[in-house]
Image 1 (cartoon, one colour):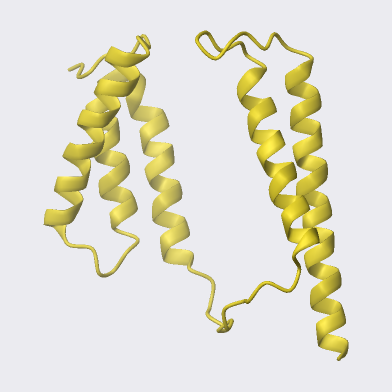
Image 2: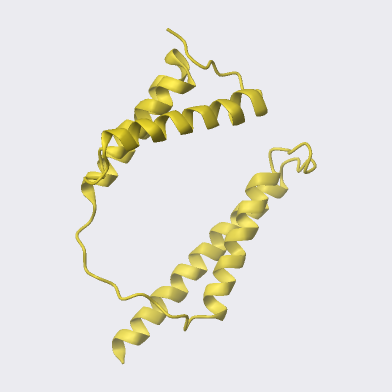
Length: 151
């Protein structure tokens, strides 16, 4: 009984934090120019994300008795955390001097090292797919001032 009360209190507190963070995002977004859906202003995306966070928080408070999966006490995934973080750092350091494609390949290859079951073939295929998608979306679609490959 006491564990159920602690879990319920913990979930409600987490929902409250999610609600407050969402409210801050909506407030901060509303202080900036919203723009339109065709031409986003700097405040539209944070406001949308904040509103979505608030809706999720309200759903968690409203429907607290949703079925939950059995929680296994697994150790923290240090390997995955390390390699995904290294991949993000490598992307940030490589995107300006070398371009979007090499930075994406480095990100995916490093992040895939965190998964013991990932094969090199899967990492290469995912790298190529994400690099092509990144070029299509960010360089050609959004016209971001990034080079595709710079040597």
